[in-house]
Amino acid sequence: MKKGIFLISITLLLIVGWSAGWFFVADKAETVIEKTKIKLTEKDRAFECTNQEINGYPFRISLNCDDIRYTDDVSGITFKAGTLKSAAQAYQPNKAIVELQSPASLSFSNGEQFNTTWASMRSSLKLGLSGPDNISLQGKGLELNSTNNIDQTINIEDIQLHGRKIGEDNINLAFSLDKTRSQNKLWPAFNLNTVFLLENSYQDMINRTGLIKLAKAKGLSGKIEKFQYAALEGGALEITGPAQVNAQGVLSGKFNVTVRDLPKLINALKQSFPQEQQKFQDISGAIALLGNAGDEIKLPISIRNGTVSIGILPVAKLPPLF
Image (cartoon, rainbow, N blue to C red; front, side):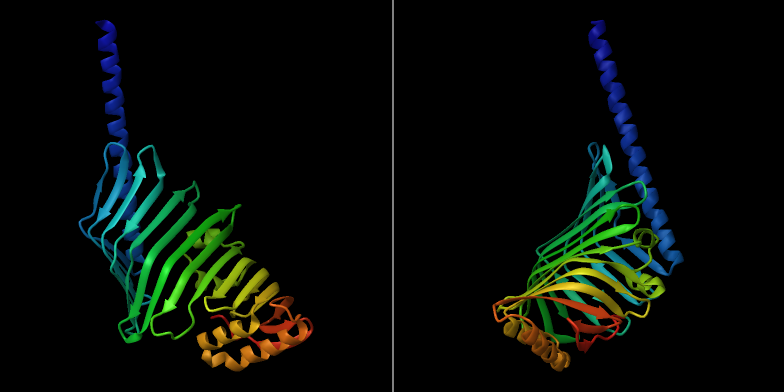
C-alpha cells in the first residue's frame, strides 16, 4: 500500500513539474514574441499575428495565427499570408517546424505587387546559444504572378533555401529552383542549384543587417561551392571558385567553369536576358575558340574588378551587382 502511494506521489510530482515547465517555456516564448514585436516597431517595422495562440500541452509548444502580416515602413515592403502553424517539442524548444498556408502577397513602395499560391510551404529552425544554427525552407507547387503585368506568371515545382552556421562567423547558404517556368515563355524553363560560403557574415546577419546592406558596408567574400544552371531544353553551366564583391558591388574571382551544349546554353541566356545578347555572343565566340569541340567544355575564367577574362583574353565587362 505504501509503495503504491509512493509511486502515485512521484507520478503526480512529475506531472506537476512537467506542467510547470511547459507553462514556463510557453510564457517565455510569448515574452520573446512580444519583445521582438517591440524591437521591430522601434525600427519602423511591424509583425501582426491575428488571433495569436500558444498551445500544444503537454508535449509541444505551438504558435498558431489565423493569418500574418509584416510591414517595413523604411523599404515600403508589405508581406501578407494565410494561416501560420509552428510546433516545437516541449523537451527541445530550440527546434521548431513552421507551416504557412497560401495565398500570400508581397507589395513594394513603387506599387508593384506579387500574389503567390503554393501546395505546401514548410520551414525548420534550430537555435544555438548565439542564434540560429540551421534554417531551412521548402515550398512545392508555387505560382507567382504580378498584379501589374498578367504576363509575368511563374511556376516553380520545388523551391528550397537552407542556411547553416559554419565555425564562428561563416554561413553556408544553399538555394535551388526545380522546373521553373514562365507561363507565357518569357524565358526558357530551367533548374538552378547553388551553394555559397559567406565569410565573416554570421554576426552581422544575426544583428539583422540585410545582405545587401552588409555588402555595401564592407563587401562580401567567400566561395561558390556550386552553381548549376540547366535549361530544360538543353544547355548547362556549372561554376565553382572563390569570389569577392566590394562595397561598390563589383565582382572579382577565379572560377572553374563547365559548359555543356554551348549553342543551346547561349540561346537560353539570350532569351532570358535579351538586353545582354551581344555580351553573350562575345563570350560564346571566346569559349568556342579556347574550348574543345566536344559537348562539354571546361575552362578557367577570372573576373577582376568586373572584367571577365577567359584565359588571358578579356571578353566582357560586368555591371555592379547593386
